[in-house]
Length: 156
Length: 156
DNA sequence: TGAAGATGGTTGAGGTCTACAACAACGTCG
DNA sequence: CGACGTTGTTGTAGACCTCAACCATCTTCA
Image (cartoon, rainbow over all chains, first blue to last red; front, side):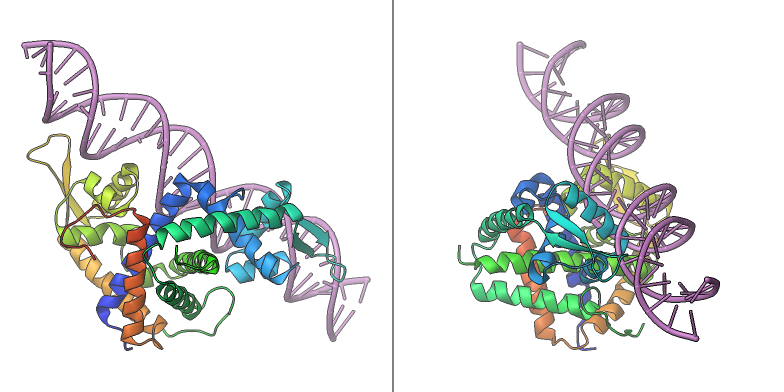
């Protein structure tokens, strides 16, 4: 209850603006943001690289999206050869999704082009400013209670 | 070129996460974010309130989206009674879009519910932290060079 | 004056990402 | 074994976006 009324305006407006900007950029220069990856690939491959093989449902929970989204995206990325799927040895219903070599390589390339993009966009920023933004962004996401850390309920 | 490689990762991942979180929330609780406004209404009405009557093309430039998006959204918001359109007296091709009374009221209500939402989400934040996030967010958007046409007074 | 070209807005087609519902296959437990 | 929950897939639908094609209207200039 500490935050000024005006802040909600600025925050949501700024966020909306940023989202549209990001969308526009990724539309205009998909290669700079995604490398060889299809649109959603980045979001899906990063947790796989970080945490290793996992199930669709774990990915869905991590990303905070519906399982059907992951199912389709995984199918596309598998067709493209960026990840491999093997039956879960302890549960016949599930599959374990893992990064293929091509997937890891694509992720590395994407990371590289993103690094260049970030360097250009943040040319005037100090490390500390950028780190602060990251930190606050991550904190905001956490406080919104979606994705990685399922949280109890917030009052209306 | 001051920003660490790792920062691009955190930034884009964090942003993606936040975007998905926002989408999920606005899907689940549209009323808390938009009040009586249809989905995109907020983004469109805010600049109208801030800068007064303007053309579709100006709105599109401001929001950084295609004119066709604005055209459709304006049509919907006009049907809903949230804005009024009158022919531009100096250019027969153009219309001037303005906020109706209902639109201004809806905007005020939305601002109110958003304030509550923000208060809940940012309950643990200090004013200074929230302000910092806003500032950095706005700066990032500006540095991405999309949207808001150069506007002398509103610069940062 | 009058055609050529730029600009404002609309519409149609298509793409991406999303959720929800229904379903088949499998696992778990009484 | 049979009821029930879980995992992943598919069908359907919606929001938001772009691009391309189009008409109506300025603007420019010979």
